[in-house]
Amino acid sequence: MDDTRVAASYVQLLFEHMAALGCAQALGEPPAPTAAFVALRRWQALLEHARDLDPGPKSTFALRLARGIAPRHFGVVGFAALACGTLGEALQRLERYHRSVYDVNIAQVRPCAEGLCIEWGVERGRPGALVDETAIAALVQLTRALTGKPLRALAVDFVNPRPADVRPYADFFGGTVRFGQPSTRVMLRAQDLDLPLQGADAALLALLDAQAEALLQEVAAVSEPVGIWRQALVGLIRAGRTQLPDLARSLQMSPRSLQRRLADQGQSFQALLSQTRQQLAEAYLRDANVELAEVALLLGYSEQSAFTRAFRQWTGQAPLQWRRQHSR
Image 1: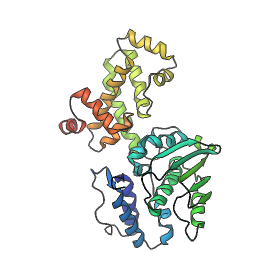
Image 2 (image 1 turned 90 degrees about the horizontal axis):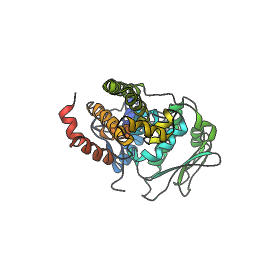
Image 3 (image 1 turned 90 degrees about the vertical axis):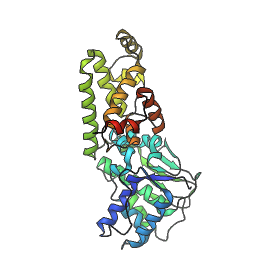
Image 4 (image 1 turned 120 degrees about the horizontal axis):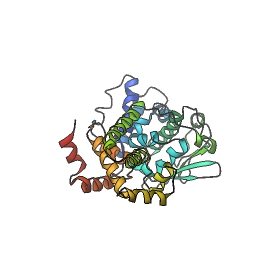
């Protein structure tokens, strides 16, 4: 587990919690603003130190910590959630982007008879009860923050041994909580998956809208059909829907008809997608506050390395090199 890590934005939750207790300096320096990740071993040590300093019951420290979670603590997954229309869509994207927040064990998201099951195995090790409980409590609390509803999990399983008192866990999660299980799991109700998201982080939404608006101004000079198609692509790219059928559906036409109309304009779908992504990428990169991993996510790439390769093809430069030359 030496190479595993968690997002620096997620670690910031702990520093905010300690600051609220008047212990802002007790943990040392928080992650640097430019840091994307924190090693898991440091995260484990920080949690243990904070639990020892917190005046509340040690056994429920993770549950108290998780109550302060917000979309911004989930970094690029927070961006992804804001691009989704419902809670179910946001949770499905967890499977694609979980490594950008919690790179310990692989998350699997799948439908089940009752609704949706999110499961983590132990293939990469067991980080311990404190890490696991913080992560699962934070995830459930995030569903509440995103929907504005006091959602209750159907069931929660932990791989760690049963604590002396399980009542605080049942109170927090709202459903059956079991310990000593083969995997860590969260089960959510089917009816909750259709709940609309609240757009809890207005600052992130404002950034996305401002960048999209800048792009739309840039495409004013192209032919009207191409401009409309590119405008539609902006929202689809943000939502991770980057296939030709996605664009055709949004324009209420068949994929074959869209391909024919693109050809009439001397365009192909891949060329249109690449041009739109490049313009968006350059707009995001000019803002030094947007991490490279976040740029990759906003452009619909599941891995930063894939975005880097594409950007090199567009510009002949790595994204970081281009940013240094063009930052505001």
